[in-house]
Amino acid sequence: MAGKEILLLGNPLLRKSSLAVQEEELTNLSLWESDLKETLEEFRNLYGKGRAIAAPQIGLMKRVIYLAWPEPTLIVNPLLDRFSSDGVILWDDCMSFPRLLVKVRRARSCRLTFTTREGEGAVWNLEGDLSELLQHEVDHLNGILAIERALGRTSFAWGTPPD
Image (cartoon, rainbow, N blue to C red; front, side):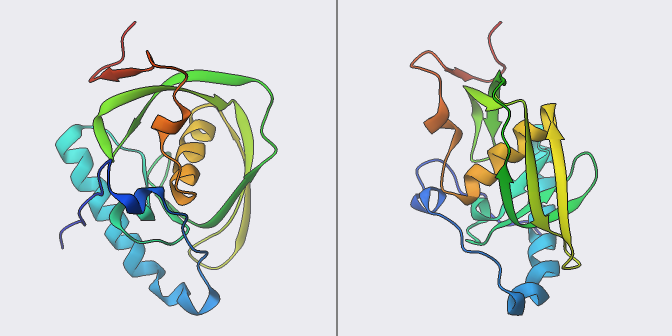
């Protein structure tokens, strides 16, 4: 089975908020997970990177994230809170604009509350790279792109980040 087309910068769906997954939709999770996983794998084969994908990036306007790192996890209806006041500045990349890097500031740590693919509640205290990554993915669910978080006009680069 082939992955789905990834929506690119300029597609208006990327700017829309996603809808919560309802209980009666839980039977769709395995199909959605398969679509997200295959799409991410195709992207990784093409670009050599990619740790997670949010459902809106394939036009599925539901609050679902497929996380491939550090281990495969389906995150349903995530909520981020308890952001640390200290942050980290980094070059953010995105599958929806794969050759563009954006310098952003993200919280160093936060808390993620979500539902698993099995319908169980889960809470993760996130730090470092995982905190940054899931802030990026939850932004997608809220219709926010990394370019909107750019630190200024010189916060954009093509390809690998400048020193």
